[in-house]
Image 1 (cartoon, rainbow, N blue to C red):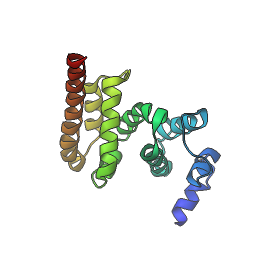
Image 2 (image 1 turned 135 degrees about the vertical axis):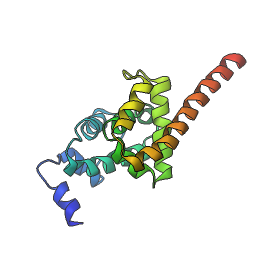
Image 3 (image 1 turned 30 degrees about the vertical axis):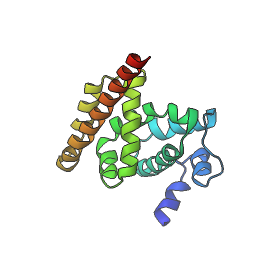
Length: 162
C-alpha cells in the first residue's frame, strides 16, 4: 500500500490520474476521458508509472460501454505493441481481461484505421518477448486471428443475407 501511495502522490502522477483512481469522475466519451486515455497509453514509458497506468487503463476498459467502448481498440493495440511482455504476462492470469483485449484489438484491426499492419504489429510484440511470454503469445495470437476470421465470416453472412 505504501508503494501505491508513493506513486499516486508523486510529482509524476497527474491530478487527472488521481481523480480517476479515487473515483472522482466516471469515464465516458468526452475530452476528459480521452485525455486520460492518451496519458495512460502514450506516456507509459516509466517503469515507475507503468503499473499504475495499466491498472487505470484496464479499469476504464472493463467499464467502457457505448461510444467509449467503440473507440478503445487503438488504445489496446498501443498498450500491447509498446508493452508486450508486461501485458501478456498479466493477461495469462486474467482470462476475462484477455478476452477484452482480444476483442478490442481484433476490432481495431478489422474495423478500424490502423496505421500498422497486423503482421507488423504481431512481429513488434513478439520481438519484445522472453521465452515464457513467447509461448503464451502463440495461443494469444491464434485466438486473435480466430476473432479476425469470425469478423470476416460474420460480415460475409450479413452481405449474403442482406
